[in-house]
Image (tube, rainbow, N blue to C red; front, side, top):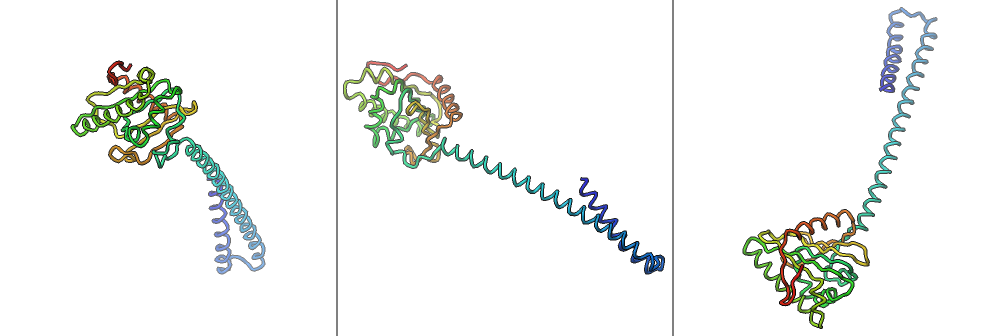
Length: 258
C-alpha cells in the first residue's frame, strides 16, 4: 500500500511541478531569472519520482522472486510426492504375470475375486500358493448377487473356486488346506464392481486391486499394486466389515470353514 501511495504522490508532484512551471512562465508569472531555481526544484521532484519508481520496481522484483521460490518449493514437493506415490502404487499391465502372485506369506484375503485366472491360466500357481506353508490363513469373501445375471456370475465363480480347491487338495493336503481356508458369502447384496487381494509379500503389506473398468466381464486386463499403508488400511477395514456380515460357506464335504 505504501509504495503505491508514494508512487502516486511523486508522480503528481513532479507532473504538477513541470506543467505548472510551463504554464506560469507562459503567463509571465515566473521571471526568467527565477526559472533556474524552479527547474532545480522540478529536477529534485523528478529524482524523487525516479527513486520511488525504482523502489517500487525493486519491491515487485522481490515479490516475484519470493513467488518463484515458493513455486519452486511447491514443484519440488509435488515432484517428491508424485515419486513417492509412484513407488507406493503402480499399474499392473499384465495380471497374468506370475511375479504378481508369488512370494505371499502370512494372511491372504480375497475380496469379490472373479477367480478366472486362479482357475485357468494361473491354476497351478494359485494351487501352489494355497498349499504353501507360508500362507497361514486364506479368506475368500463372495457376494451372491441380487439380479439373476449377478446370481449366474456367482454360480460360475463357485465353480471356479471348487476347481481351484480340487487342484490344491489333489496331493493328500486336504486337511492342511481346509484348516486355513475360510470362505464366506454376503447374501442379498449386489456384486461389487471392484475386486482386490490383501496380503503380505516378503512380510510387506500389499494389495492387488482390479478396479472397474479395468475388468471386462470376468477377465482382469490390468490392475494396481498398492503399497500405500493408508489405502491398505481402508481396504482391510472394508473387507473385515463385509466379512463380519457374511455367512460361512462350506467348501468340502468333511470340513467347514470358520
